[in-house]
Structures are given as structure tokens and as C-alpha cells.
Length: 332
Image (tube, rainbow, N blue to C red; front, side, top):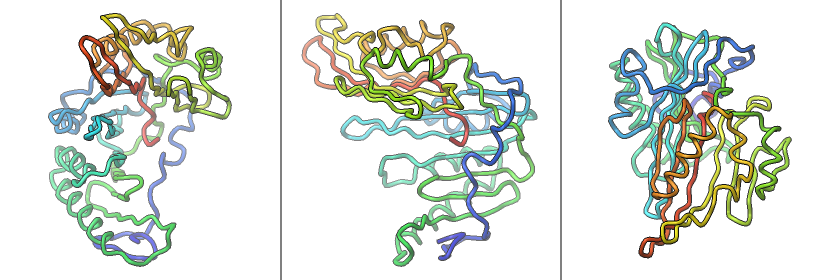
């Protein structure tokens, strides 16, 4: 295990893996927090980093910022033969001088032949560090090849590899993916705002219960709705919702929506602020009527809608939607 009892090819360091998130980066008072999402910049370091991803069909946005830095979040949905969607994301943290401080490419849940982490990370990093991408591909290829031939080691070991160049420290494993920490740039206070688009979980849980969700908060952050195979889960900072994901069904018969959004949310989307509630709901309903997916920014809010189409007869439409509102904090 690289950086542990067993050594894999290409390892040059002996310290442990970086913590996610790094210690202390969110332990600060609000520092000019701005949680209004906007399209990822097309110029400067942010534009260079995200351009290869955007050209490959990824959605990228600047999801939050504060007095010390700004966070970018990119995402693409990979579909399998059963029409299930497996999201792949990338997270970037830049300082106020537009210098890259930190990057994370988590692995996807899908089992693909090609390595999607290296395929996404290499061109993005090459855009600002010309020699970094080839090294990323080589190190991950060496790691995967050595892992295939590994025959010993404790069952609880998580094989990892790490390396360093003039730009950054790199850590890779199959559980966390690729984490990159710039050597000469850092952000002391990472942005954590979400007040533009989200409310507190304690203020929303009663409405979820009214909609038929089994939800016990605190401490539960994942709720189920058995009668519709629905779910609702959140990422929190304290009691403040940072991002929310939920699944709902859709059934259109003769041009009329038969499964109303109010079945799950009889009081509306009260986990969202009043400023964004109506436009986000309208965007969801638009996708439900058309049976189509969506990835974009609505009223300064990241909205991801993955549509899984079911049986279609005539003008009828059946689909299940996995919906995400807001982006999680970097490194979470």
C-alpha cells in the first residue's frame, strides 16, 4: 500500500492522505459569504481549468465565494444501459488572486473500463500546469496496474499513491479519487454560504413529515417516502441546508400531470428560500412535463435534474426524477 505498509510504483512520499475537508477550513465566522451561483468564468485560471470539462459536456458554475476565495463545481451525468445516471463531479478552490489552491476529482459510482478521474483531471490541470496532466495519467495507470497484481495486505487497507511536483501535492486512491493541494497557494477561510437559496433543516422537517416522508431530525439527514419510492437527503452546516437531493415520480396522461409535486411537498419547497422557491419549482415542473433532464442555474441556484424515462405509450409519459438543489461544500 503506497504511503503505508506496502509500496506501489511511483510513490515518493510517506505522509498520510489529506483530510477531507482539510482541518479548520470551515471553522470561521462568515467572511463576506456569497452563495449566489453564477456561470463559471470563461477567462483566467477558472476559465482555463473548466474549459476542457465544459467542452466535454460538463456543467460548471462558481457556486460560492467569500473574502478569501471562491469555489467552482463541475458535474456530468454518465448513463448506463438501464438509463441510470452516475454523476461525476469536480471541485476547485481558487484564492482571490485567481490562483488554484485545491482540487478534488472524486471517483464515480459506476464501474467503467476507462478511468474517468484521470480522463477529467488530466486536461483540466494541464490547462494551467502543462506537465501535470501526463503525470496524473501515468501515476494513476501505474497505481491501477500494481493494484491488479496485489495479492497481500490487510482487508481493511485502502491502497493509495501520492506524488509531488513543482506545482502541488497529489494523493489518489479508489475511495477518495484524486486530491490536489497547491504548494504555493492556500485559502485560509473556505466559503460556506448557502443562505441565498436554502433554509434551515429544522424549519423544513415538519413539512417533509406532512408530505409522507419518514424523517427523524435531528440527527437523521436522509428521509424516505415509502409510498412513492421517494427520498430526501441534505448536506448541512450545522442546521443550515447546503444542498438537497430528492427523488420524485412523474406521470402525464393525455397531457395532464397526474402525479402532483404537492403530494411530496404539500406546503411547497419550504427547504428553499422564498427568493428562489417559485422559479426552481417552475423549472422542475418544466422537466416533469417534458421528461427531460436539466443542469444549470436558476435564480442564482444550482439545479440538477436527472430524468429516467419509463414506459411510454402514446402521449403518456412516465419518468422518475433525481433532483439536486445547490452544491455541497468543497471537500465534502
